[in-house]
Image (tube, rainbow, N blue to C red; front, side, top):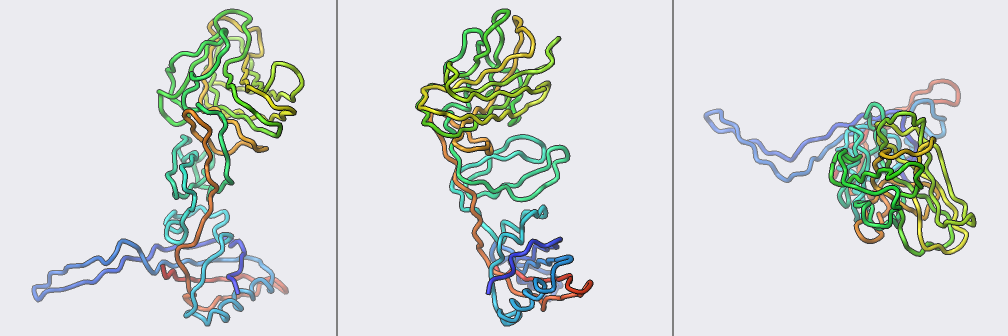
Length: 338
């Protein structure tokens, strides 16, 4: 019988302690020897508010099936769903099986890199408050030079130059600046030649536009052809003085040989108008995923998959409190035996 796969309304977690032996000499001096570098005896208290009596009784049934505090078991991931507490709970009980780097936006709003097997978290954009685990399916960035957008084909009207702005990752050297070389310029600023099979794609790129006089907004267009046979996508953005990730779905109806990113102001372009771009991405998905850096070839980020690396036992029998007919609260206290 598995532990009930219900999402708790609240959790309390304590880290436990390291295995230590203490020695005291006759003089009163004390010395301690540490055995291992892994904590043990972590406790996790789960509260389930206003659940059905039937669901509440599943904890009692599981407790009896595990023979009280003697049986050990693994926790389902639903127990952690929406969790925003101490990351030690994850690192103690679960290990990410993703054997590739992955990026996420940290509590300061910057794009940072998680190493292989490292668990990622999501943070609320405005406050930086942790939202919970970041788990994504496998995805591939088919844009082959996302870390250097000066590698590729550009329109002569939007020449690329070195940057003078920090990128979304808080670094300077990766940002590319594009400037209008004349009035009434064309809008193509980035092109990649490759073979694109028919299907649904999502193209995304980070754009930063400093405020410039008489520009009410900017339009971003993505297409795979200079003709109208494919469904190009466009959207207007108020991109001023901040990095914005623009993301557009595009349907390819026949095999194509290049992809274009276009961006132009919602007025007649003038000489000297400029913007910055960073981190182009093209995925064979319906939506964009976290940024996948590439340098010369397509890169695949493996799927996140959390695997339990330890087990738990009951600290005491589950406590069930009847709230009203048919509805109960449940309190479950567990001890880690990792």
